[in-house]
Image (cartoon, rainbow, N blue to C red):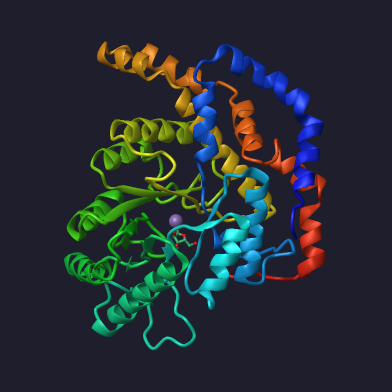
Amino acid sequence: MNLEPDYIADYNQSQLEAHQRKLSYWTQEVATAEPIIRKLVDFQIAIPSWALGTGGTRFGRFPGGGEPRSLEEKMADVGLLHALNRASGAISLHIPWDIPTDAGAIRQLASQYGLRFDAVNSNTFQDQPDAEQSYKFGSLQHTDPAVRQQAIDHNIEVIKHGVALGSDALTVWLSDGSCFPGQLNFRKAFDRTLSSLEAIYAALPDDWKLFVEYKAFEPNFYSMTVGDWGSSFLYANKLGPKAYTLVDLGHHLPNANIEQIVAILLHQGKLGGFHFNDSKYGDDDLTAGSIKPYQLFLIFTELVDGLDAKGMNHAKDLGWMIDASHNVKDPLEDLLQSVEAIQLAYAQALLVDREALEEAREANDAVRAQEILQDAFRTDVRPLVAEARRRAGGSLNPLALYRQLNVRQQLIDERGAKTVATGL
Ligand code: PSV
Ligand code: MN
């Protein structure tokens, strides 16, 4: 389904007066409003091709209908999101869930929707029907060199797909690890994984990045071979300057101080990218900002601070992506909510009075430091985010317009009620 530009213009017109009333406080009273709006216009968050269908748990899956049946339809969905919010201008593919058979045609389609290709993702956590070797006991860490070679070859294949699409990063997430004490020689697993990663790294084009994603547990429940930021950082350091750590917010043990992890990785020049989601218990993959919005804000506060300290470009120098799953919500609505939550946290982080914060820190004034942060966090920045969207050609309220246009029903009419998108 294509969104007529008139729909957005008409909708915005109907909301303009109320929006301008809320925005006037900002434009009249806050000197930094204009630069914040401009930063928001530039800031894009990639959508993973596997998050456009209904997710499930091992207990079941309840598809809501109209799910994309092909890569082209997934791109149409991301194009729709981007038309509504002008902040989802990139798509991340997981191979082999989404194999671009005609890269030229797919690239052209992407440019029609104003999308670029974000990091490509390899999959060595599932056995494919035609695979000779099994990943039951790991992939890059496996005791059998033939399994390791199959996993290495797959990653190199994924890089080739990425090159053909104009992507410039590979994300490697390994489910490798062990389920029981004694099952695995940790040192050997580390060494084998490192040498497999070295083979993949050697195939990386010069201007590419390799993101090493860590995860504390699942599907292995005793040990994960890339289980925390320390091990990812170690692999990335040993691999070389093109390798970075990727932080997925759901991949930590409970109560981990993610903002501190992010600050140190960035400080060390080894933070590569982000997978946004939220969680209460484990890797729950819930809507960004739905459970711990203050944590998301604190993470962004460290990101802005660290990026500025290094003179890095907020929009371009890190990979920003959502990695969530939608069990009970319409995936497109959920993604709109996640993007908005990320933009709000980013805008609030941009509001923090950094000079005053540094002074408070130097004076060991914990009360003042907290006030400064919470002052920004408690500020309603929604008019700024809406204004950034409006200026970029998006809707003042993407979710409201999505519902007003009955998009899901239109997708069901077009694709059917029982379609199932590839993914987990
Ligand atoms: C693993 O839980 C993960 O976060 C990785 O990024 C995978 O590639 C993705 O989820 C698959 O759903
Ligand atoms: Mn992830």
